[in-house]
Image (tube, rainbow, N blue to C red; front, side, top):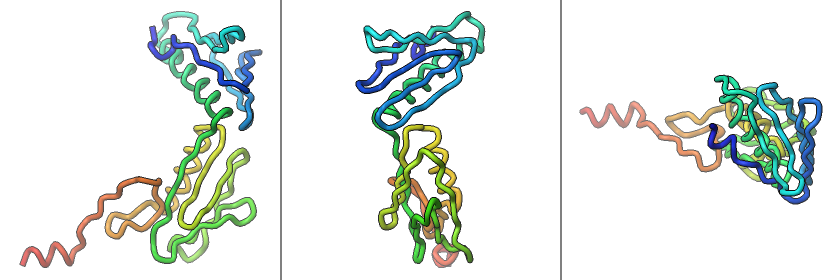
Length: 184
């Protein structure tokens, strides 16, 4: 039995969970999310105990794999609509900057043109100086958008310029001049 899958998911205050027609709908103060269930698992909402219980129908390999995954996804949905998720990025480099231009994130990161990245519906993007804060109720959408922004200009290993996650450590390599001078 899946150790994670058999734990009940507590429902936070102010959050409504409904299961109907093979779909789980979660609604809270930060928004609403939906997920389609696979036929291998069953989801029941216990209103009295304020918890969601995920069970699997059989002991097939696929059912066992989806048992814990479904429980974790429902837990992430409940946390997302009650607290929300947030990823922060740092833009580092001389002349590198980010700004909000309408419904796009405009990045000037060393290319000839300004890169414009459309902000998906349901996400909030805030730019404070050299920091970009991405927040929203859907954990997967927040993480994916932050990863796409970072991919535009990954931090390079010689000077550390680029877009990185807040607190990310980039190992700086010594350049040719440093290694050549040490060899002589």
